[in-house]
Length: 245
Image 1 (tube, one colour):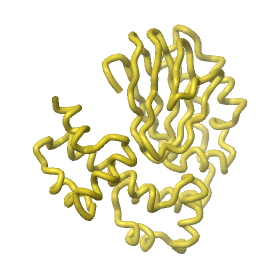
Image 2 (cartoon, one colour; image 1 turned 135 degrees about the vertical axis):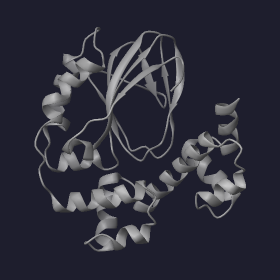
Image 3 (cartoon, helix red, strand yellow; image 1 turned 180 degrees about the vertical axis):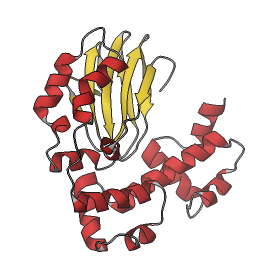
Image 4 (tube, helix red, strand yellow; image 1 turned 120 degrees about the vertical axis):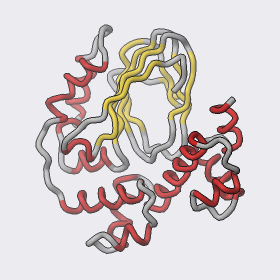
């Protein structure tokens, strides 16, 4: 985020961690804007106070469901805005919906929103969620196999290898990833290759873009530039200047 926004994160444990990557709480002491990085996933945001816009859309009560993230999106906020949310893993929301998990039921989300007040914080938010976070896992073989494939993609396993390591057929998994992620497995792999390049830039600002392209599996520097800009909405050269100025 940025200095205008104070962000706290909590990573859940247990079975629910297969579906949720983070629970977060944000407080804006000053008006400002920031960019939410692309991760190929979805989320839910609860607005507690102030005004908040995501990609130009004003968020309304009681909660806002974020669509699949295929590009970084700008978030703008007024001074005193307080908001929190749940960030699912790619396909995490769809998988929880498929097994009718109570956490993602509209009635549950409305109840959680109503339980948040002006004095809310990360701990109280987690308390509201705790019953649902600790709900027992409902086994579903296709979901588990798809999750494993997505996990391999996120960890930059080559697609062909990821498919070969799954007991289900490639075409069947391709369809299921598309249906649950909202994007193809190939598109998801593109997103995480760009995210890897972003991490490389943060870790080593002296690395040339040509070498970065080679290290991250792009065909050349032009390919890196095009993919980075398409997904993160900034060129790698510009991003490097922003974080290392």
